[in-house]
Amino acid sequence: MKSNRRNFLKYSGLTGMMMAGEKIISPLIDEGNTGEPSHLLQDKHFNMCGYAAPKLETVRIGFIGLGNRGPAAVIRTSKIEGVDIKALCDLRPEKANGAKKKLQDATKTFNPDIYTGNENEWKKMCERNDIDLVYIATPWHLHAPMAVYAMKQGKHVAVEVPAAVTIDQCWEMVETSEKTRKHCMILENCCYDFFELVTLNMARQGLLGEIVHCEGAYIHDLLKSNFSKTNYHDMWRLKENMRNGNLYPTHGLGPVAQVLNISRGDKMDYLVSMSTNDFTMAPVAKELAAKDDFYKPFASKSYRGNMNVTTIRTNTGRTIMLQHDVSSPNVYSRIHKISGTKGSALKYPLPGKIAIGHETWMTEEEFKTNEEKYMPPIVKKVGEMAKQVGGHGGMDFLMDWRMIDCLRNGIPLDMDVYDAAAWSSIGPLSEKSIAKRSGSIDVPDFTSGSWKTNQPVDVLMQKGGNTKVVV
Image (cartoon, rainbow, N blue to C red; front, side, top):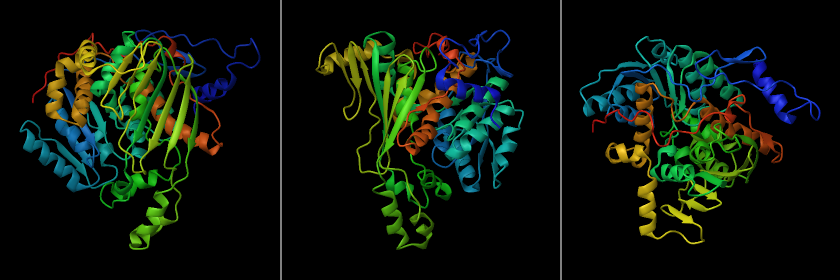
């Protein structure tokens, strides 16, 4: 059953008032993170944006999901000072044991316990008293249930993208994080891509002027991968593609949401989403089924359209355009376009270009000068080491390092539960829009009004930054 708070925000968000000039309820008062939580109807709202949990000298981690993303995360975090890897969990014994072997081949420091062979082993791991952080890299539909359970067991959570696949899951994550006061960080690595960090700082310093419009995408040809018998356990990702919408919005949205200060001075107001027909997935399923009985159950299914375009308008009148296509033979792109009143930035298909005050891109020399000037401290401090450790050119490691650094210093995380919910919500909301012939759909305010006073991400790393890296 939905909480009173969810229903109130849902229905009051349709108009904001019963009739002109008549307020439904007095504005939510944000009493800050040091006082008692605010109230909305009968539900308590504690603002997790800017929340600083007690510092942890050593961050004891348990990992769930060791198929595709998990093993690399285990190795990356082993390179960070103040980390203790306590447990590894995967349904498949060979995956859990394989990850442990890779870890011990890389370092002799850790001897994690293994949880495997049973669908509920992950719960046992979450219930341990000697784990501070649960790192989740499982199939999408398991992200939110695992995150919620782990927080209820007193653990901070780091969860892969998307963090949730339904709006109810988004709300449950938010409400659980607020109630337990445990962090729920979405592992959006693209926010730590070097160019994305530069453009974030440029926007923050006013170089691009007033930001008017942003674009992001996830365009990546995964057609063969999605139909592979071995890439995704139990064909889970192919099954996800039977939903029609922008199923993977956060790689493109996360970085531009930080530029626009979404949930921190602005919020996404409503969206409209449209998809093409499916021109490739169903034909491939039928072609494979004609040769292999394994694929027969998939031959009669409907799949998401090849290209989805979702447009979003924010409360302050900015717009965002997101694209999603993982089944056409396109060149990889996240677009990452920032358009302001004084200049613009664009990464794809170019390697990364900036234009200020004119219609031509900066020369390579001008770009390098501005890149050096606006490169945030996190890159200057650990960027080269991040490249050595790896993970999509180093951005994965920057993300992990910054999370651990924040937990060890007792400072707010760069990405909180409201980011996890808002960015992930675009998936199910785009499905609803498409089902209504591309009708406009309101985006919930998961902050319950706190977006008006929440502070932007600390791109200058004014706090923390003292955690060492062992390469």
